[in-house]
Amino acid sequence: MAASKLKQDETTVRRTRLLELRRQGVRYDDERILTLGYSSPAAARRDLNRALAAHRDEEATEVSVYRQQENERLDALLEAAWPRATQPSPVFDKDGNVVDHALDMRAVDTVLRLMDRRAKLNGLDAPVRTELSGPDGGAVPLGTGSLAELNTLIAIAGQTDTADDPTTVDDAGDDSDR
Image 1 (cartoon, one colour):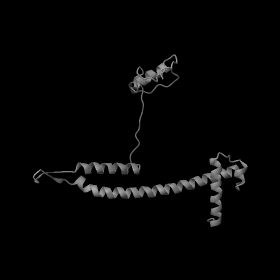
Image 2 (tube, one colour; image 1 turned 90 degrees about the vertical axis):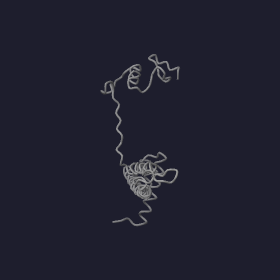
Image 3 (cartoon, one colour; image 1 turned 120 degrees about the vertical axis):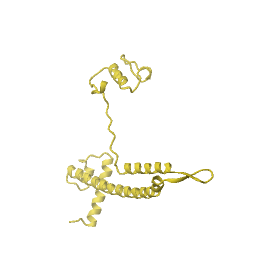
Image 4 (cartoon, one colour; image 1 turned 180 degrees about the vertical axis):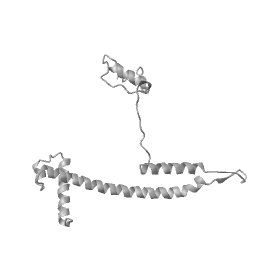
């Protein structure tokens, strides 16, 4: 059964005050939170989680509406650019004579950028996987190596030249070059 409008308003006021107190760092077992009408600190924690979940749902709805609007805009732009990107147009010489037919490469670039934007907007691109490997493609050896050993590994990985790196610390711990 749905809560009455009065009950919903009371819940909103209580949750707003709870959120204010929690932002101030007030613990759940503090008297100020318990006097809001919670029977225990656990009840206050559950109510805060419900409030945050409801907010996430509202936020997800807003994001969905925004994504739909952006997709519609991209559709309109793509529709305008598509014919010039896919159908050869006449190429004229300086006298106005047709010498060839070619695609409009600027339109092709525009279409590709629109498609890339759509893929990013909708999360279509797979995440890029990056892997760091050790010498000869093997595993990176981990342990409690000395600073010299770590600098050697960095040099092997090709990330930096330790001789020219002013932030490199030698084995003696002398960091006066920094």
